[in-house]
Length: 205
Length: 160
Image 1 (cartoon, chains in turn red, brown):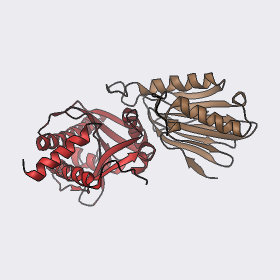
Image 2 (cartoon, chains in turn purple, red; image 1 turned 90 degrees about the vertical axis):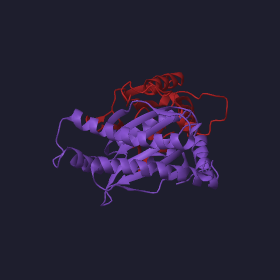
Image 3 (cartoon, chains in turn yellow, orange; image 1 turned 180 degrees about the vertical axis):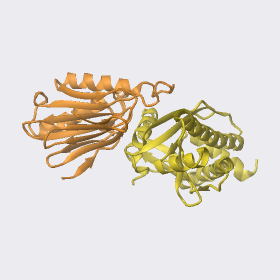
Image 4 (cartoon, chains in turn green, purple; image 1 turned 30 degrees about the vertical axis):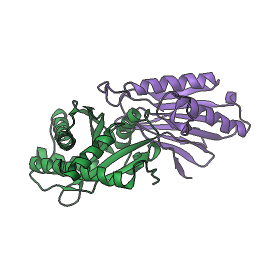
């Protein structure tokens, strides 16, 4: 996968450091909700060409649930929580009982709530570290092919540039099954906020 | 036979026995051009309606206008005129069902409109379409037959 580095190596490391802290808090929040230890992958921070973006995820034709959380304030952008097919089954079992069978509205609201908790935690940590205001807007939930959900999200950012800086990490269950793929696209001002948060973190301010 | 994947903001040309495939179209639109006489085709996976600035556009497949123009150029190199081509399009869904208030709001509808207008400006006849709605689509375009198959998760497969 070709990636064109727009951020320097030091900047990527700084953004990853902040993302790791925020993602770990999100992992804790999900562990508490599910009452099982949730694992987290090392966050990937990269500038990715639009045409290469969906290939990062695989399974583009498979059913998924996406929770898109737009955010505003000193940083504008979108967070997407993508629940892959295996994650949907696992989470339904944990949240709604072993059969996972329940009213569609109830199961979707459960995923929206997880999306809210994860994105809210991520943004709160970032806001605290950077001492800037970041406010999440109500989540938008969609059930469809994973590729189509990613495609629709990219159309929002596509007008900005031919590449997007993405922060991606996975949350898995104790056996390694993928529960959630978190994709943060911070937008044009967002990376500066991450860098500021990293700077404050390192200087102890 | 092989499947040639047309990624977001990309376009590809193909001859038999190949098939061109665009996975997971949300608000994006797949625009396929086909010559029945020459048995060749091309397909773009556009994500935005029109080139928006005078800056050099390096991703010709990203916009409806630049994508159709470059695919027509490719056909003309093979001495196929736009009047010999037909088009089929799919996609342009409103995946977030009107809830999204950002810059990308109603982008699917704008992509559909732009695709139709640009094809018309080249005199290319639009012979089939499966557009709009709120569902994602995967498209498979068989160059051998010109068959354009559109798959959705809930609606099964349509042959256009």
